[in-house]
Length: 238
Image 1 (tube, rainbow, N blue to C red):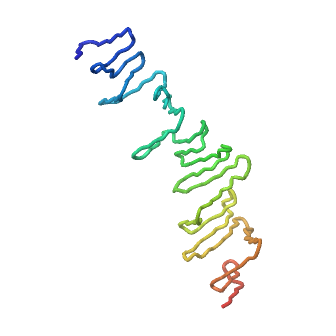
Image 2 (cartoon, rainbow, N blue to C red):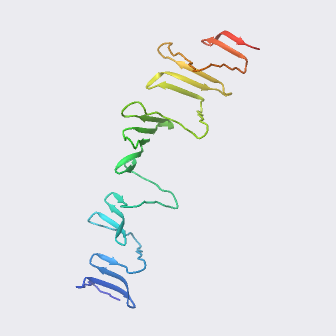
Image 3 (spheres, rainbow, N blue to C red):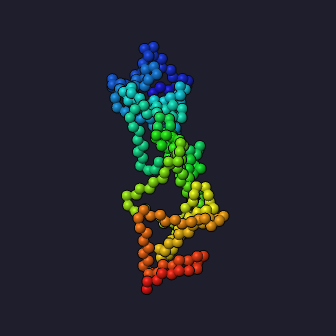
């Protein structure tokens, strides 16, 4: 037992301090190194453990090979993969509102708390696909071709493609023209109304152009030709 009212100073001119048990070295303090010759080292404290490196870097090594480096606001894995394996959830909490997934310092996938998910093309980071969630949960999907107009949107399900709007209504617009549109309305029994709207005139024509035949097959055996809701011609095969 060392019990001193003042300081205890261990001053070894040889540069090493050894802690032994029955002649076996348990721990060696050498210059700026703590060496455990065998077994494990456990730090068990009732409070916090603080690692304060004025040089700005913390290194975790295996046999003098760096496995992980903490530098300022960065975790660096010099080689190999990095796996996060937890028994519960993984939460990413960014007070700056943005979370980016990067390769070689370039962001290819980013999420912002403003409600936008951005994905960039590996071939050209100026070609972008974004998904934005707005008020009431409305969603805007945007594709951008920086050099032209080839940012097509393709849906390729390994099965059917089903659109199930709650109202049964779908709209089709030309770019940013919110006044003129085509409207598809699906009713309770699967009836379909196709409506074209020209807000300023009556030029919202409907053209069917088939590279083959056009077949009208009415199970009800009637075909109506109407204007403004009024039937002017009726083909009835009953």
